[in-house]
Length: 287
Length: 113
Length: 113
Image (tube, rainbow over the protein chains, first blue to last red):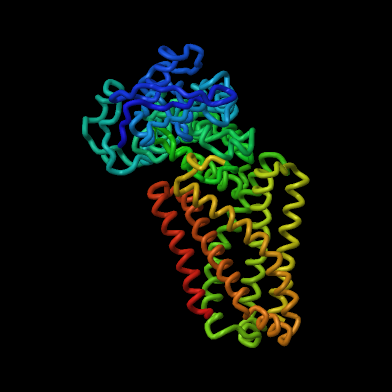
């Protein structure tokens, strides 16, 4: 990788690019570069960041044409041999000023996709009534049960097969939700829950650009995690919310979201999961 | 058909026809590649298809699936590139798909008769 | 259009799928209509096939066969993702579907000339 002595940074200032010369450093992130410009060269530059360690999802920008989280993007990984760096705000979103995009439509769509957990009624218990314990894949280890909850009931390290076949979940204390981590649904949910809401996927998605109503990858990735959450009680409403042209059925699997996600999540597959679920629901006349 | 429900159903039709076409196009391609060997002749084609109910049924299903699949695909392209959306447009595309399929079925009947 | 955010295999696969789909959908009514008209008699069909013997038509046919095979292979990849959840090795699958399309085109060319 090339490491020039100074970086030639072009920053979009709303109407045109402005050029800044920034000294190159070791282990320099793109966010470091932006901060240098604002603190040392041009205090009028507007941008946004908070945690600087890839947790909050505030600092995403378009770096050399691609949406990225700038706090965890090392300059040497994206800079050209000539030291050129081009910074723009995230695409597909209104711009507040300079490099700060307005994420309001992005989070509004999370709401529209019913991206909030809605517990089942406590009275009915958190587990579907009558669910059998043998939905747990055979051979799975029991010692994933949080210590102190059920631990004493089952010897640690015991195999699930030791549980009498056909035993009802109601045997478990009523307020305890049995969510076997190795179950298919839980693994689907787990695959998508690390989203930090940075909107990199949203800014990378062409369907968002083509259809202003389109919910986008992050909102539907979130919806898919909840569809797979056995404790959630709003499955039907959520599937309604993500159906149709504004939802999963406009996704063309370009997989730009998956390609760009800084957390290596796979929203494209999550959307495919929603399509699959809705397909069988529609075919079997459930909607 | 502009509601999410209708759009979902259009997508389902698109994928069901895609599954049918997944099989039909393989058959079609194999037929093409083997049939063109040594040149095509009307006699050769008609010998294969005339009075053959299996080929007739195949081509009728094939034409119907292809007509609908293509029309729904064009609908999506039109919506995303020129913003042509709505119930009226959807019904028009569906009609276009059925008319196209009709031409295909006419051709299939011609090969059978 | 900025190509930098779009230069990855699955995006390219989408473009190929969309362009091939568009061209095939526009060709389909033409194909059905021409076939339906030519089939009115063995002599007319032979006339049509003789017209189709010229190299320009053969070249166009080859392009169509490649488009059809590409749309088929790409569509099977998308449906594997959608219905079977095959999320791994998408890039290899894109490469494989491109290979299938070119192979079918080559097979057609070998048999037609």
